[in-house]
Length: 340
Ligand SMILES: *Cc1c(COP(=O)(O)O)cnc(C)c1O
Ligand code: SF4
Image 1: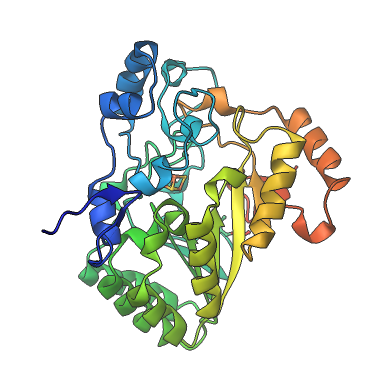
Image 2 (image 1 turned 90 degrees about the vertical axis):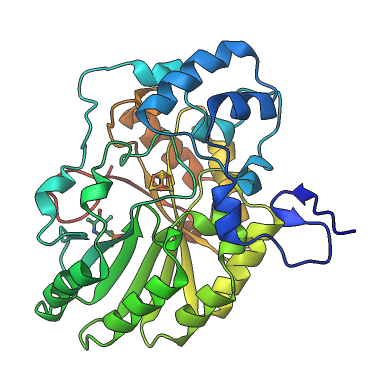
């Protein structure tokens, strides 16, 4: 008898574990299922349905398993459960807060900062974070086919000032390893490129994403490798995430983390301190702490600038300098992130 009982994305039988693709396809994408699974009362359903219509719910089991049931204030739940506040439309909250549509010289390539470009390697994510500045981004227009990649690669070849390619998205690791290893091979053939950076939340959401196929192309590239994770709360870092970080480091990657400062998730000193400590235990250094981009539907997550500065000033009294993230905002038109 072969019976597979799925717990947190793993089979308990001796068979191969469920692949990351299967885990992704089995993610919860339904408001009723999410509320029922987490023991939330019916009062949350209307908001969940309304938000879901704007930006789909998507939560894989491996992440869900880190959310405590029967607690609407759980800091991980707040990142993935739409609530009725998403329907608010305060002044200044817009659909393209970063005005990225103006910086696409070639399909799938954003060149705003000197010496580095951002490549949209996959339009998809493994999780839909409610505060995401891309919740209204026209992804379908910006996920190049292989033929279209040639244009982006030609742009890179022709710009000898570019030393770093940043794979972004969506989540670049939502693309399959065949596509990614092809892309990285193309990139490493460009002599002036030194670094490959990967901005991803997938190793956090589905740690099994860091499998041998990924580690194969990552460890064999001549490019220096930086993986920038996206973790907002220490509860996101369980043993499986720690192990995934270890594998990425063994493949030669430097690990950094960016967080978003979010009301009700990580907007207090103790939570930010614990996050930095836990990141370091996982072999990851804090990089940026972003203030929220003013995207429509996410205003309820905002922490005002003055409060953000005070928090970070207080945090500095609790942490060594190397565990302090840089508090920044993205201002459209600027050539770098702007410190607060
Ligand atoms: C954030 C960002 C980068 C990377 O900026 P760093 O400060 O180097 O981390 C590059 N390009 C774009 C368009 C960005 O938004
Ligand atoms: S993983 Fe990143 S890009 Fe994807 S929804 Fe979350 S914040 Fe946005």
